[in-house]
Length: 252
Image (cartoon, rainbow, N blue to C red; front, side, top):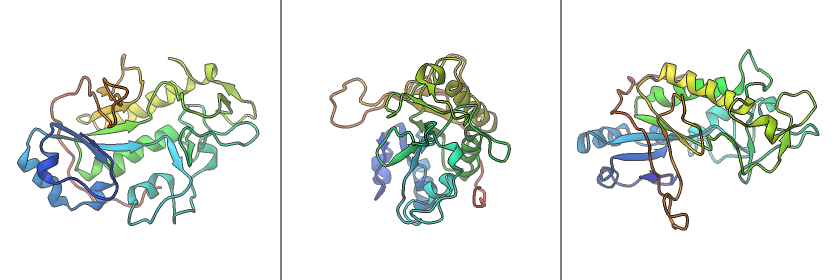
């Protein structure tokens, strides 16, 4: 079951009908812990995955109480103010931001993006998943949205990936050994090293050969005309052990 409503969650009995459930990572902060305990009690084999989007930087957010998890990685202080490093956003040599979804900017997940405090964005993003999502102890795994070998929906087919003032073409950005793939691989390796038991699923066309990912999700599988969203999970592992709960500091 793939459920991303931000206003409410289905009942425990409804969620427990499924063997695999994906809900937004923010519910670990918004929903009572009793809900997660009840799910474990009702359906011991249920695998609960946290939906995470590390690709789309939002132009604005709602109230912090409504989207607490979104404020953290993108470093928002209020609904419209963010200290997120601009150099970590995909931009053209002329300074135009790249977008693949309305009202968002594409994050630069290549391995040649300018570093901030000694890290590329892919490393920062992976560590945020480890420290702020997985460490809550609520999840069996992570669903990484828009996590693909190529961003086909980007509104620019060339942009400056390394800040040298020269735009690279899609052919220079993507590909099996390209800077985008290397950046994703770096993030995957960091997450796997620190979350060895987690189910890691890419919701896109990510190559799985020699990958630390467990599988991919396909929207509207196998009927592309389906009104709802269906998912096919591939190569999933046995139920992982969740980390113990911890008190987490603000992430920066």
